[in-house]
Length: 269
Image (cartoon, rainbow, N blue to C red):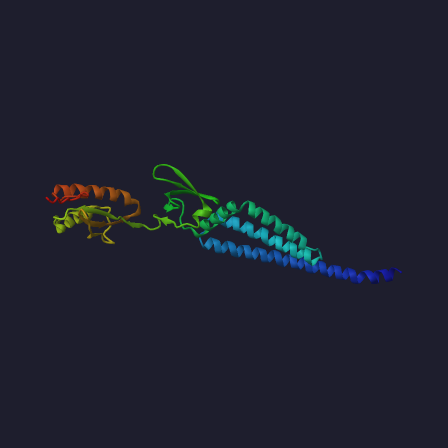
């Protein structure tokens, strides 16, 4: 009797033991694969100079998702139905996503900004009709400090889909200026005066060379274009100083800087 019971139970025990061993092997391989994928992801992100906070966040996200998939796979191996469980999770995810779609868009935008780095903290940028120095990049919004001492907070979802001008991206920058002179002006003399101002300015770069050229024959005068190259941090200093010196030197040489005028011709009947 005992022999018959043992003969009946032995195949089931062997089958259960093998199933358990296969499940343990599946679990071991799955954990090793998750560890390998996380290591691969972290290495790729670190080589891309992604911020540490972003690396940690994405690593945790991948870890949770991978463990969830591994758990569902193990439950399926033991014959447990996972369809209802997956459906419930999907429905909950859709409901949460719909209620927080604005926040999720800002969150996704923050991740893109932190990963792609169209700008970094300390850069002076212009975007979404605002401009200023970037003082903080969080996951949901970016804060700018404007020139008139205001903090401007821009949601990352809008910012990541907007045109962004980063004035601090390059070491050098061109200063675009112009001045109008009267039509009776000796243009060669006016150009020599302006070129002399730029040549003696220590903050104006020699390479690339500056440009001084006649740009337009306007209604009230001739427009002379002034385009020196400077280091990024010297932009405003050079612009303000050069414009003031051009005004003073042209006045000293008797060169008229015109203003809009209208000439009226009257006919006698």
